[in-house]
Length: 362
Image 1: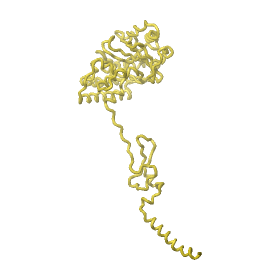
Image 2: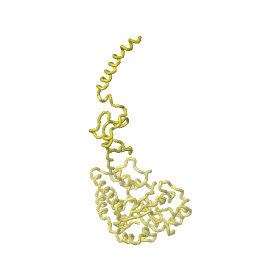
Image 3: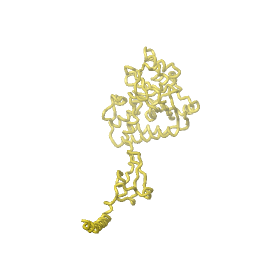
Image 4: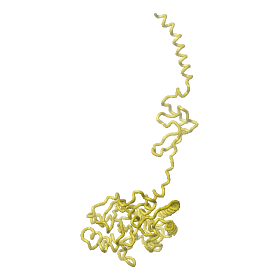
């Protein structure tokens, strides 16, 4: 029994030697360890890439460094994924970004046209709100409406009287959320060629004034939440502006506007700064893009009722054309702002007259 195992030892040694030779003769892809770590030289030649939807860095080896065993377990096995450029927004998407909903009136940034002479004066005095209910040759529709409402009892009369008499709320500046919707003035009255940009404080509140509403005054915060109007007296120091809406019936032309009324709620304002110039350039490009868009398609005009129906989400059409989207950005239903090629050319020419001689930031 002892001699037999001893005789088997040479045969066993020979078999093991053959197995080693056979193992080294296998193809490289079968011999690669599952968790092979790249050599230091390969790590140094790696390039960082960032996936569009994942900001974590990854390593992508150069093509010449790649082989079947060079990718660690869990990594992509081949090429670097390049970040894809975002598609440019369409004209419709750009207009929708500028749309204003009467039921969501709070806006952080407002724009107000002013004559060049007043812009120069503003740059000197830094008094951003100067108009009152008695300013100008005749009272504005806003002031006339307040004069009617001040005689009411309850919250409506209280708020109207405050906007007319309270020295912290009775100095105004009329504004809108973009420049192109008011650049050509209103009913033959030009507003000016210098543009003032106004930024509201984050805690500012906006009143909505709509005499056709059962509750003429409504109060909104930054999150577009409606606050109880009975809190006006408590919150009056935070009221920054009145979103004033006039529909058909008591005015010749439907319009809407922001009336800034409280300088303490203005975080900053500026004229002809790079930010304001960029905004005017953006608006010029948008007007040209809209003009080019309607030149290549037939756009049915909106009726008078349809034009201001687009101002509220509850009355907007479910299948908007570019004319509907245009109207959603507008401050007035006046004919000279209707979506026609002639009007757009006139608007583009008006924006080109933008005056930058008075520069101010406060």
